[in-house]
Image (cartoon, rainbow, N blue to C red; front, side, top):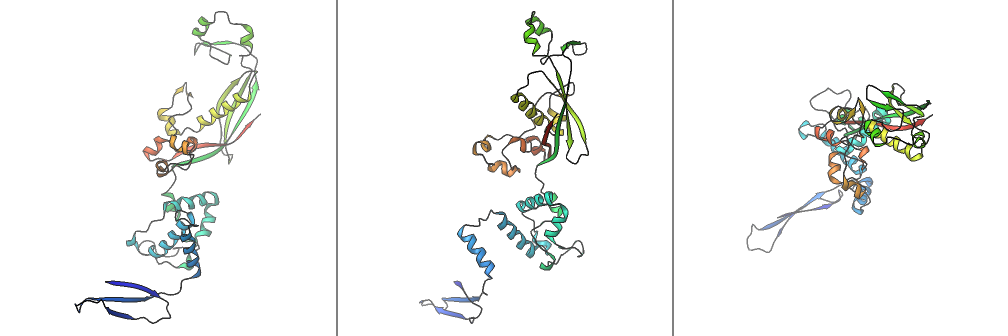
Length: 323
């Protein structure tokens, strides 16, 4: 039986063998003393914060510190198979997204730059500012499943003269806010003029999407409106257009209903809905393992992309302007 105790470095080391009140002469207890240097004040303060519960182990600071120390001890030996923490990698990827490469180089420091590629690296603290910062190649392996391309949405309207005209191609009477086909004529043989006056199209709005860097501008929709347009109608139109714009191209090519090359749905198949997340108002454990960070289905990678392992890129409308 062997037990260990700690004493300061100033005390002498000693090994003692104590009889255990046994008739067997070989039945003894070996007590060993191991010298332990005085702990650094930073280590003491950190241990107190952890033991008191003020610093939980799932906090990003704790994870970054643990990741940095493990990197310093294991990165030089390929046999240890060191890998960065996923949470730390995603956190630094967020810093890289907002701060770009210059900020990441400042946080990281020279690192292993100058050492021979491949084989065994030698870690030196003087070459690193914050060792928890993974390299760019490492961060690229842990991309979140949801990404956005920010755009602005603009509408510009023009007034038109009310009127009706029969379209021989689609076999409909155009000029009203609702389709007028043969079935409507049979059901309304004598429509009231007072009711039709409010249903005439009096304005056409051309809707354009422009990237925030102003490198691309593309007309995407036409909206026909009458004389009476309420605020609720405008909000419904904006929500409809935003949902249609956020449909991922891969989903659009596979399972989105179109009519004459016009998107006719709101992209219900290009979403990820979780009732448990909405009920708890937080990301459930199952969705968190999938990589979701938000409870709103609009801000989540769709189920189709998650199953195939591809990144779900959606347009994010940051600005809506109207003339």
